Length: 269
Image (cartoon, rainbow, N blue to C red):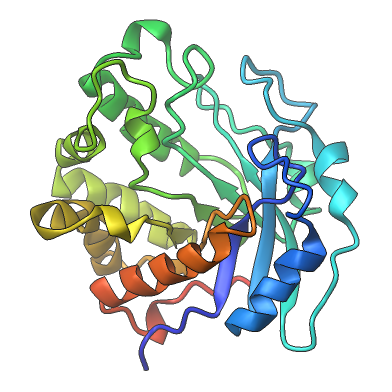
């Protein structure tokens, strides 16, 4: 059976500083999920644990994201409490293990390299090679940590933020960074990821890709599938206007990858 887009595991509310939208509240998010025929959705506001020292002090702690609790539930939709937890330039993830147990789902982006000195050193900021090396090292370091990977996802793997805020970056810069990572290296990373049971997010603006660029973007996902990784869909919606386009993009990329239900990541059964 073809992959059914009945999950959205990456949604922000007004509590995320990059949203701050008074209409992006749990009740409206649930209404979207019910209309879209979702079975499981996750609230993943940006978060950094106050107990974890970091130069990346831009997100609120647990006391901020828990303001959404208790989450409303639908007749056919399960609404789960999660977070998007960043990694600083020292490969520290902003999540203390005790708080990980309080969350239903955790997503980690390794490619938020648009924060100078916070996620990548200033000396490396304008270098595509340094960003590529940082991407690979951050990915591998994450996979060595002691976290509950059975309820974790790797966020927006091919997002343009791997080249974010570079002075001379073009649309293709992030693809060039990914192109420089060999199939062998990706297989090493995805093999470890599959072994740990961590999910891989499908979150791509599909309107931006066609022809050769589409295949360049899809290469890591195809390799991940070969390695046995499982996939979930996420809209990364920050505003109500993002739900419709997000749903369309999620459906499109699962079709491009020709995924089946057997390829689906199922942390909630």
